[in-house]
Image 1 (cartoon, one colour):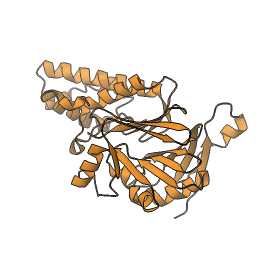
Image 2 (cartoon, one colour; image 1 turned 45 degrees about the vertical axis):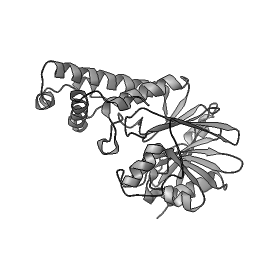
Image 3 (cartoon, rainbow, N blue to C red; image 1 turned 90 degrees about the vertical axis):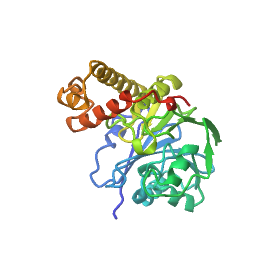
Image 4 (tube, rainbow, N blue to C red; image 1 turned 30 degrees about the vertical axis):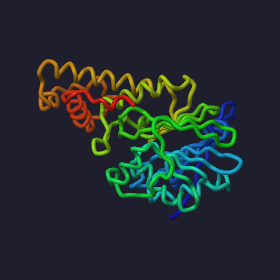
Length: 300
């Protein structure tokens, strides 16, 4: 497979000519973005099964720390891309949740000596086979929060309320002011939940609220999928999901069934963030969660 790379340095104070170098390359399978200080984003553009998930990379004097590992098929392109950043070994891979498009590459990184870190529930889901084909299991797990002091950076790993899955975590690089969200936030569309992985659509809203509470307004955001984002993008997604939830709740309160909701075009006001083919799924997700009993998993 041919591998080429587009290196985009997203630093303040770049000249116009430097920005011009960050142009589309149709042959690129991995794009490398310098986000802040020594934190990078690897954006996969490979075909399925990767679905274009992102990796956050912290470069230290003694090695690299990654957030997520993309899919099984992405491991070799990712390793090649990392070599263009640093020849240091990968020391840690932190999984934000259990899905295979973020954990499939774990086995390749573990094989070269990396420690795989995740929430307790991520390991449990992977052992149960609830998140796709089993890959390398995390060997270091945590409950609500774990802090790693890696080189001169403080890396905070924080469990989020049940949302996309029941093991979602966000990683914050304190000095760089960069957050890697996994699929708790995606910039290529509104985040959703995975019922099979213990998620809850109402909890997706709670997770976004938690992210907004935790981090400064100028934090740069590496999403699970999509382009580099900002806290303003997180706020927009949170506002849209809250409004959609309230609209569906009001329709349910008036006695509407799911079939009636599907025929009401109730999500038309949010057509810019929920495309037509996704609307039935969003409606069903909120209907199921709002119709059922309160879910205690919203709290840690």
